[in-house]
Amino acid sequence: MYTADIKKLPRHYLPQDFTVTDWAGLEPFFKELLDRKIDSRSELEQWLKDQSELEAVVNEDACWRQIRMTCDTENKALEEAFNYFFLEIQPKIQPYSDALNKKIVHHPLLNELEPEKYHTYLRNIRKSIELFRTENIPLQAELAVMQQQYGVISGKMTVSVNGKEYTLQQAAKFLESPDRELRESVYRKINERRLVDKAQLDELYNQLIEKRNQEALNAGFDNYRDYRFKELGRFDYTKEDCYAFHEAVKLHVVPLVSQINKRKKEKLGLDTLRPWDSEAMPEGVKPLQPFSTPEELIHKSVACFSKIRPFFGDCLSKMNEMKHLDLDSRKGKAPGGYNCPLAESGAPFIFMNAAGQMNDVTTMLHEGGHAVHSFLAHPLELNGFKEYPMEIAEVASMAMELMSMDEWETFFDQEEDLKRAKEHQLERVITIFPWIAVIDKFQHWVYENPKHTPMERTNKWMDILLEFSDEVTDYSGLEAYRSNAWQRQLHLFEVPFYYIEYGIAQLGAIGMWMQYKQDKEKALDHYCNALSLGGTKTLPQLFEAAGLTFDLSPDTIKTLMEFVKREMETLD
Image (cartoon, rainbow, N blue to C red; front, side, top):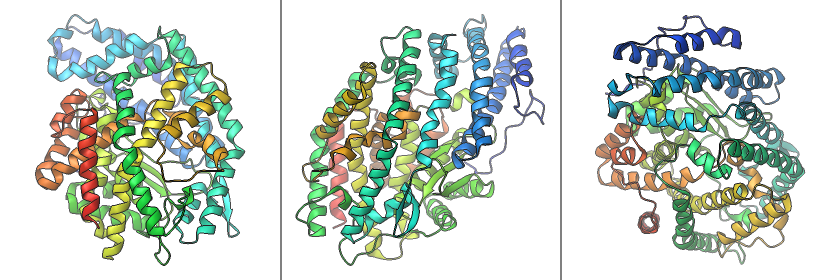
């Protein structure tokens, strides 16, 4: 039986009142672990637990520094605390981590550990040893700090609409307005504002590419893409699988997007569908308003989750009780949304920029799925056991979006609004695939050609974007806006190559939803079982535990897309 009554991990190795302040306070624990004599299997297992405890405390401290900074990017003290950890503490931890990893894998008693239990854990450790290079320590410290500059730059972006200042996330709600002139005006304002910082973001990206490429060369790789695949632990698929995914999206998804947009154009009664029309409502139809305040979003999300399984609602309630939710959009807050697992506390933190739109509901349900994953994996014995593959992490979140649809009357008391919300979600399930393919394909080119100029990058971006564009939306005259559209994707700056996961996971999520439609309780049992395994199994094994098959083939994509299309047709 799963419970949301999560407990902070008890400390047996570090003092109860210990907090991370500087390296001088931390180093003795790393040194003791490195010097400790281990003469039996039980001593080796205790050593692993002590190391895990130290890892959890350090990881959680780093997470809180990032959370606090992204919640308030204008607070210099918070930025300095974040930078201090990644410039002064983390670089000193890395050589010890490498030495501790080598101590484990070369220990004569290693073979006495249960092979199945420790297989993926030791596989990750061997991968870390293979990638570690002393000369990369200062580079990685610089990168950790530089990547956060994206949030600082983006957090300052605002526009004025009807005399009032809005963040770009808040302003996006006007794109749902029936007033086409207002939509176009706001669309242009948002994109003009992005162009103001185009050169600054271009230069930041140039520096990130240069440093990442050097990191890869230092580790003996031909390019950063190959290095990063290894670093992300992509043991179960290759770059060729990614290329096949891109082609399958072009073949089986882009035509569906064209159909969706043709229907949208007809519904709106337009001769030409422009990009500011994509979220619009027909004349006389008000935009969906599923909630008006962050408190209402929390209350309704808890109710929705509880109807699926009471445990899911309990997870969100516990986080709310612990003040682990920061949901509203405001000036000075970094863009985007995330669920941050907290290794020692157990209950994660959800950060997002809600502005009262339908997209905010799906973001909350998505991050809530991640949160449930964090709760389910928390009881695992070692911190390393909880390091699950990102692909299964995104199945957790995306499947929650789809499975929760049966309970969306929590957000909508009008049948027509509920239908529109579901239609919006299913359209999104399909339309996200081309964007995933574009971002992923773009990254492959960027890091295979690290010496490119900003102009070459822009040209390549436009080529790829056009390759996956639908046949209905008219972008004429908007080339300047489209040319830097990649800059709105924070993953490119902060978590390179972490994007194909959304595509792989969306396939898994649709498969999970198919199960859910056939047998709700069985599907939920599969879901919880897979997530509670954390990272103790391989990616194909985790998919199997969820009742899924790990398969990126075009045939699979075609089958799943046809299922979603049929479900959309039932809404008519």
